[in-house]
Amino acid sequence: MVVPRFWRERRHRYNLIGTKCPVCNTVYFPPRNVCPKCGRDSVGKMEEFALSGKGKIYSYTVVHQNVLGYKYQKPYIMAIVETSEGPKLTAQIVDVDPEEVYIGMPVRAVFRRISEDGKAGIIQYGYKFVPDWDALDK
Amino acid sequence: MVGIVTYGSYIPVYRIKSEEIARMWGDREDYPAKGLKILSKSVPAYDEDAATIAVEATRNALRRKHIPGEKIGAIFVGSESHPYAVKPTASLLAEVFGAYNAHAADLEFACKAGTAAMQIVYSMVKAGMIEYGLAVGTDTSQGQPGDALDYSASAGGTAYIIGDRDVIAEINHTVSFVTDTPDFWRREGQRYPSHGGRFTGEPAYFKHVMTAARMLMSKAGTEPKDYDYVVFHQPNGKFPLRVGKRLGFTKEQIEPGLLTPYIGNTYSGATPTGLSAVLDIAKPGDRILAVSFGSGAGSDAFDITVTDEIEKFNRDAAPTVRKMIEHARYVDYATYLKFRRMIVEVDE
Ligand SMILES: [Zn+2]
Image 1 (spheres, protein in one colour):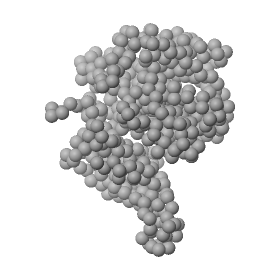
Image 2 (cartoon, chains in turn blue, red; image 1 turned 120 degrees about the vertical axis):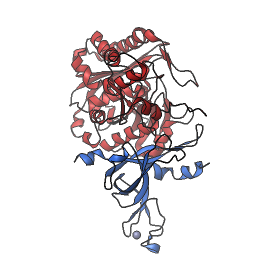
Image 3 (tube, chains in turn purple, brown; image 1 turned 180 degrees about the horizontal axis):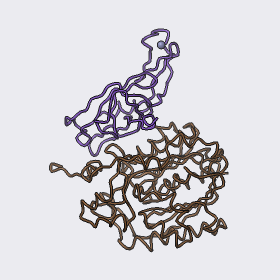
Image 4 (cartoon, chains in turn blue, cyan; image 1 turned 180 degrees about the vertical axis):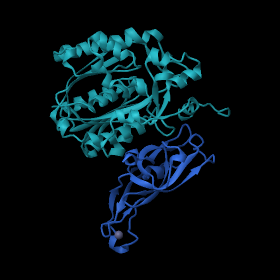
């Protein structure tokens, strides 16, 4: 049962809320209580900071294995997304075919089902990324 | 002045062409295009549901005009495909948008739950209970494979923030007409809905839409020629044109808000999204009539006037409905079944 952990992290997962160090302005996602760069100077000062959801693909892989829960989505794309605010995060890229994806592709965050605990359990929601077609058109 | 402060829609990117469905079921090739006037319909991706659509539609509304969560005093979500039988979609929206003090609930009334949500939120603003309210119509509806509804039941949604300041479209009047009519239903635990065949047209759709439209025009003291646009519920591409003609509206008034030929029937999302497509192109002073229909059966009608505020409003901050319609990725019937979780595995 993973309900409690997911529930605690829901605000961050729903809206990509990280933290920002007011001393050096570095943004962190997932959120951190202390800035590794500023150490003691940042204690108790870290501020919540919502990422814009815009970024680009830093690296990616196409998964063909039948991983539990992904049978109906394979092949699926897992990527490291470099957000425009700096933090890199791992996420699924959806609404696009694997052969269209490339390193540096502009992407934006969307709200999707992440997993579900069988047919009777809780549905977990959170972020995935889709190609930012507006940025690609420009 | 109470009315729409901002709005946003969301249509999944995937589509299936009617000719692909006809090929699959051995129907006449021209049946969907001629009989139903539906060329394609939207298909939710495997990881989309009525809640994800509601979140994306609301995000698009808030991109156009940001309203902080603490000012959103009500959230009502209309859908017949809420992801849970018990656990509200409205509370998920409250969490996502930080509206922790909102009066919140889910609504269900076949295809008119979205406009019912708009009426409730409108009333609460008018009563002075809340500053802003969020009303959403969203669905990922499903028809029995091979049934006529397999061509039409689709996915999409639209969100409206209603308030009494910076209103871009004033709601002048709203009325409803409702009767106990068994035209379409789904019993608890049944996967697919049932419908009363020919019974769905005349005594259901036409009677309710026409009665509500006439009640509204009589209350507003208007007639069809006073409106720049009219949006009717659109279970297929034919009914809205036919009901419009019978009421005295022209094709030119109807077509900008008629989306079913391209995306199918988005159920609770249908009338709200048709209205959204009209607001995408509306100018100050434009008058709009919108009439929903929900089986079971009832219609909600709205008389709306676009204000000067729309000129200052940041419409371009979110994609228009037409733009989302154009951005389509087509899937075959097997992929559609996979996305819609309609494949029954042997060991299930
Ligand atoms: Zn720092």
